Amino acid sequence: MTQRIPILAFAVALSLFTSAGGAQELVVEHGKPGFVLDNGSARVFVTQTGGHMTASFPAGKDRPRIEPYHVSPWQDEPGKVEPPILGVLRGDFFCLPFGGNAEAFHNEQHPPHGETANSAWSLVSNDEQAGKSRLVLTLETQARPGRVTKELTIVETESVIYSKHTIEGFAGPAPLGHHATLAMPKTEGALRVSTSKFTHGLTNPTQFSNPANGEYQSLAINAKFDDLAKVPQIFKDAPDADCTKFPARQGYADLLCVLNQSNVAGEPAWVAAVNTEAKYLWFALKDPAVLPSLLFWVENRGRHGAPWNGRNNCLGLEDVCTFFADGVAPSARENTFTKLGVPTTIELRSDKPTEIRYIQGAVPVPEGFGKVEHIEFAPGSAKFVDGAGHEVKVSVRHDFLKSGRL
Image 1 (cartoon, rainbow, N blue to C red):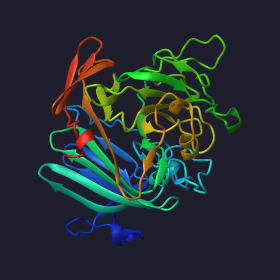
Image 2 (image 1 turned 45 degrees about the vertical axis):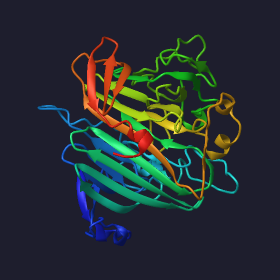
Image 3 (image 1 turned 45 degrees about the horizontal axis):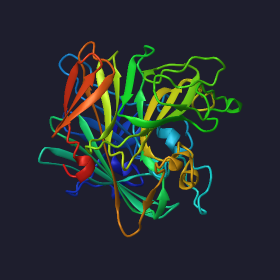
Image 4 (image 1 turned 90 degrees about the horizontal axis):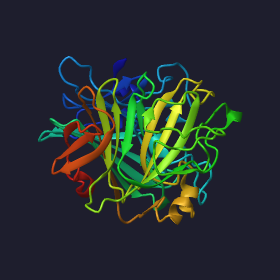
């Protein structure tokens, strides 16, 4: 249910204005207020708390709109869920610092996935110019002083969202990244996932799901793999798990990671998920020199404490610079990834802003289109090719990842 509420109903109302000076409205979707960016084609919703983003895209005549992002099942239920990140959990959100952050770092105690995923964002502008619609939000951090500016842009005729997070202050090492969380089809194995080349694959180095907390995992602890279709399981003599097909392994929650390989041609690294049931393709593009890792959060009703209650089914495909989901302190120390030459933090500076750029999109695919095998990049476009040679061409300005300009 979508509901519009006058902005003056909220304590933060006085700070929410367009760049032209007009008052905005907050829109409530799935029980939480937020901001809307809409150009008549792509439509983006961002929660005020935590900046969690969902979106819908055109799918063509006589087909329902594409809605690739997960919304946690407790969103419309009464009562407050803590921490705030769980209260609004949906879609993609920016994490700074990424991870659970249970361990303090230099007397800093950050919430899970940072204030950027938990605190209230303020509106700077929501405008349209030259066929580009842009939403700008800002957040002042407290645990480590700084400012983060979130810019989301959609362009006419493109089913793409261009994200840029500008970090000012927040000096010191920090793991960070995007936490894109996808909705699952009903049919087992109907979502086919693939990535650009990676150098190493690893499962979580410690127990990820603790049965004492009503949580269960299926993947082995601290295991290596070089094929997503062959990931070791925790059970004795169990066959390897195929982590290219979802949903799968009901009753378990797991975490695994691949370390993306930089392309000598400077092309983006990518992850793609084809929903063969609803016939659409979701994708994300990144600069692997900035976000070198991709985490898979596989949640298929494997958590039974509140608010999960054994009912949450989603797939996180999280492009990050971090050591798994452990937080700033373990990421800032030497770890398995750094020993392989892969950074797990970015050194942020108080005298120079840092920009994290990211691209996501979703487009319809024809009947029979399967798992993406490779992408052919050209100026202003990307051609997705599946294993049978079927092709889907997408308009996308992937040079944004390097230039920051559209």
